[in-house]
Length: 196
Image (cartoon, rainbow, N blue to C red; front, top):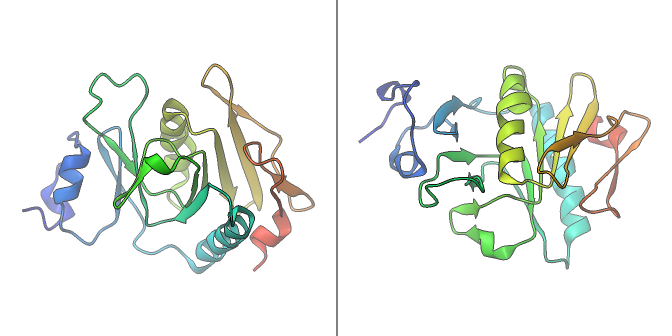
């Protein structure tokens, strides 16, 4: 039984089946089979920003098919090109995700790409969000991906094009409303997102 992260080899490749057996308290994500440590508890400002997104999306999606979830919430991803459909090597916990296909939901979370993911940068996780998660969300077909940066108070938005590649939009700044491509009726003041 694995009860400590120290018992695992960080350079090894692990699957979702392995992930389910781990009994330690540290929070981790698996990206393409590699372990990424998560911060033990996000900072207060991170949590406040997450609450703004979740609250506004909850109100917006009320009485609609789509549902919003916040971390900790396991999202298991299987790339479309994956030859081993039964093996899952990516389990992430996005800060916010919106899922419109209820068949992707089960008691353990979501299996397959959410329609929209929002990640909030924290000190130390920028490289994970900006590179590894960007690539894995693109490969798995997440239609819209936002990165909220509390330091610069900017929201970066990426939309999946017909070729399955992300196209970056003009960043949303404090004087603007952030608008969604997947949900054109959704608007949120950037100043409200980052209000302390």
